Length: 549
Ligand code: AMP
Image (cartoon, rainbow, N blue to C red; front, side, top):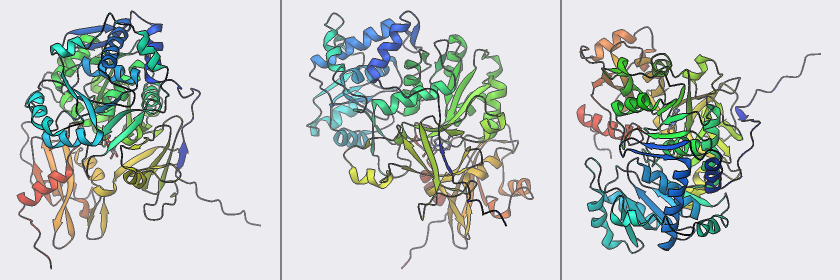
């Protein structure tokens, strides 16, 4: 008798762990951490020259929370924060969490149109903002939109007299505790407008339970203890900064180090060296900028042990350099999105080096992943690409006041459909192969730009590469590579690239067009704006599509 056929193994995994989920609110968790090590360092803000021990940090958070209560801020009120990274941002994050006000992160690169949208959509009653940063005059932009915003009752500019007066240091902290005691971990506590590389911004609404646990497990997987000092050059307005950075630290006792208000490669490495940081975060382009500094070799980075690269596809070559040249031997790659708090998968420190530089790791503890056929919704077998879905404690409560939009991405069984394409191997490691919308179809052949970008990194003159599809009469779409070259390199022509790629890459995957640039159009979180690149490319190549009937 022949053995019955074995069914194929489905692309499904659940993350197991000996460590249970935390059942605290963010405020209680902070108090627990601070109570255990009051004199250790909690926060360093290099630009402001400020340092806080855990005892000082909690005292300031409580003083601010009391000031907010005295201002009339109530549980569930929306408090906006519009500022680059700074200690006041972090203080406000925890002060609002303690009194149950919902913090609304506002992207520091927004202009008036976007600000007005967020103020209205979230119904922000108190807005805390920096006065200005680089080309952004926040105070002036707020004054411009304020007259038409009835819901916005108060604006406080950081470092103004009004801001200073908000810290009620001699007040009765018991009042903060009374309010804290009424909160539950499943209450909404944060709204983040997804970065909008595609589509209209929507306010992902996250609970204490969502983001506290995600920050905690991100830190656990890279072994955070109070001996760690984490350099956070990624923006606080995004989960990478305020969850994987701040909450990972406050839930594990590690120190938060803010190297600068906005990303600057020199100030980042200065901070790592001067503060003896053990961990460094960044999106790939940040690491590329740091590794490319002329005086890179002069930095003492020997304190670095770990860190995280995330936010967009992480080039294998760059990961290898982070390990070899920065000494981040335990660096991890995380994959996720705002709607899932954000991290869904992460590499583990004991994964093989190959797995740690070439996959986004495995499912996070207590979460589930599956890969489905986007057409049928059925789970595909291991090794077959499809749409990655995430389920578990990290999935957002929903998009703020947009139940229909929520229902489009979270299904009846509570799976979040990410819109990312991935493939899961036999051991549960996941690779992100592209976005559903990021796929280029050339003459019927599906091309995943990610694959071409990885290939381009192997060219000795290319330091960074982005690949897009541009309209083409014959094939529907053609590939175009935007590349940044190493300084002093000869300009790269399409012919030279073809010669380099021929024989190593299928012919249809060799970009027809090459465009050499100094920088790519980016969002603040370091995501390349491919939509904008496509628009510019159409102009540049004179490809404007002819009108159709
Ligand atoms: P955001 O909501 O701004 O965090 O953007 C989330 C999106 O960034 C995801 O849906 C992915 O497309 C992309 N992303 C994040 N991390 C990674 C990663 N490690 N590899 C590939 N893509 C990523």
